[in-house]
Image 1 (cartoon, rainbow, N blue to C red):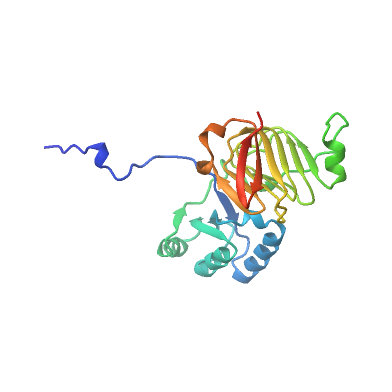
Image 2: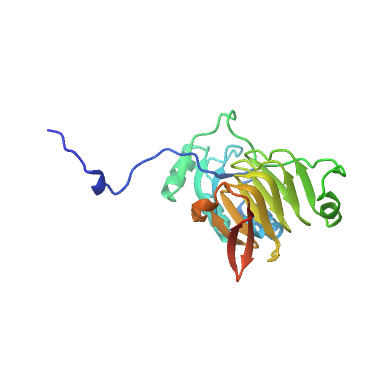
Length: 245
């Protein structure tokens, strides 16, 4: 006899999905060395370290017994949230499970890309109306698509992307961010605390928006604004999104 379950009585369902995730590829197993580098990164881009989930890749390490608990503690101290480990020996796998983390087998390298800095472009031509003001203020103009797994930054001014920002990509700026295309990845403006910074895009589908450390994720955005041209700015210490149409 088969039992039928009323869907109204179901507490959950399993669904497959592709979620954006940052991979922290470890080249050292020394927690103190990791702490020192994270401290430097935090001073450069504090808005990035806002409880960001990360996968710890230990594939490059030849360490049968990893100080995984200490490494995770260092990450959490710097507002990174380890959710899983990729690669490593069986003891590493067992340690991950004991700490409540997931474990992934080593990647084959075919479908993964390192989180890389997009190479700088040559000086922009005079045809772009934003070029003179942006470059003069220490900003940056990038022409093209920022692809998944890439990171583009303007640490001293505004960032102008004449193109799209794909899902899984990240753009950061000390000042404002202007995207003349679809914004599907993560955009972090005012990374040094500039509360006057903003984010402007022609088509909003962002995974995460942040201004001076105040952020909204995709699920927090009004569905009526998705796909619209918008501006993002702080108002009374709250991140507001309004249509440009």
